[in-house]
Image (tube, rainbow, N blue to C red; front, side, top):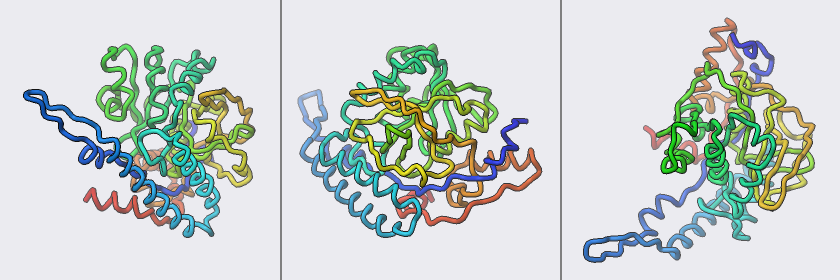
Length: 346
């Protein structure tokens, strides 16, 4: 039995506001590509003006949506996080340092210079010495995933939003040059990765995490607000795959560095970062913020639990091993975007 089962933090939780990202992929494939017909060689050309017009429309829609959210979260103790997120997302779009997929609102934003930041990350001693690296599945960290595999390391990647599975392990010796790049995408992870369960015996040497904003002086970090990075971290703690000494690194644009994340307002499950890599610099935060010790079940809402099968399995496993019923967090109202996704699945 894993000794982590009996730690107090497992009778705690992660509460977060789930917000689904807007996507222009469907529009692009239907409207931004035009067929150029030659005699026997039809080709697709990309309509940049149509793409940009739709991006701007969706960006305006995202801003309007977030304005409504901001009004609704005035009394939310986490409302200050959305103020910072919105400022960063807005600035990245306005200054055109945002990269596809756009708009970057409600995402871990892709940014100009992401490959350069990844290159700096790959030169870190903690990366060079790592045998297994856990990397988030977001677009700005795609190059980190590639460099992990290309360096002969084991790559651990979560299924997006943990709603379709748990983690997948990819190993360089099972791939060839033509499949390695594909393996760095969410589709490729599902195709080439080996799914693992909660009983997998694995040691993770380094965690790479995506961020919307991060404070270089304290290591305080904000994600996109769904809390999946914290859930992933908590489950890895449960598995014994990581501990307090496991370095946490993030790659961001320099404009995502902030100085107004109040450490005293961070929640017990918020994951701080030890190292920040940008396109121009590497920052060692020497963070003093405690790292989460597990999953804090007493704050995990029934609605969020119902979305993630692996969490329900873990809860049942712990209750079966301890003979004690775990607490449940307060109910939360899911954002309209999340509710629409559930209805579409029916």
